[in-house]
Length: 323
Image (cartoon, rainbow, N blue to C red):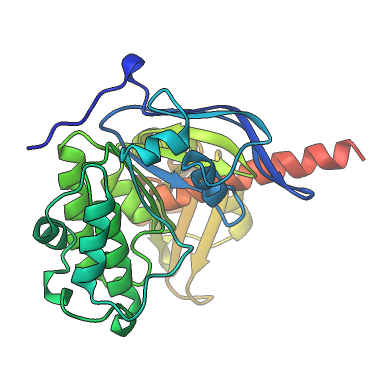
């Protein structure tokens, strides 16, 4: 097993009061963030949240307008030049008219700490594609080749921007198995994704960006708890009490309601509640008798939507008050 070089102070990367604008658009806004050795970190946020811009700053592809970004105690460009960082980005194409093996061989040769080509092909799950021309690959296969280029050498940090886009389910599973192996060797893995189930199952730590600011930072369980709500689900049959949507919305803690089914028939009810215990008690006090009652924590996707939605409402209210 390879060893990963450590950084004094235990910092892999640090953003300190970092901002970046493009014209009137503030893509990154006062970002403070530290990554530690051995973490697998998911970077989440709606479109326009600043995820790709933050990765560009981290890799030294752009400079901040304000604040500082460091990698392994030095500049991002120095860390990249030293072969300490591997990256798989959405932008940029692959060389055409070459075979996959030729491209990976080149990447291994120019990396300051390059691996053996056959090892990289195997780790990326593309051994069977080695003799195929790059311009004959599917979108998902191209993604796997980009991953191979990102792990062509003994990097200490691997940065992935929407890495599994275009991959089918089985290939995505194999990809994340490869990433777990990288993390098991002590590398730090940072990935931006729209697949929230990946963040939930893969990441040790989840970061949520919103309008260029970090609004949540913790484990998946902590992010779910931050949303401050649970889900109450049940069925109501006609004989279980008179159905009135207003009654359900008035239950203690209710912040969201979804009802399916036809009038006069069975209704399936899902309530998002900040006080599930009081909400369930309120059902019975209202003379309702729910069937198949379940109280569960929000999934990461629902928690993400709740946190970003609340932040949108706060920002909109602030903008309105300053007009």
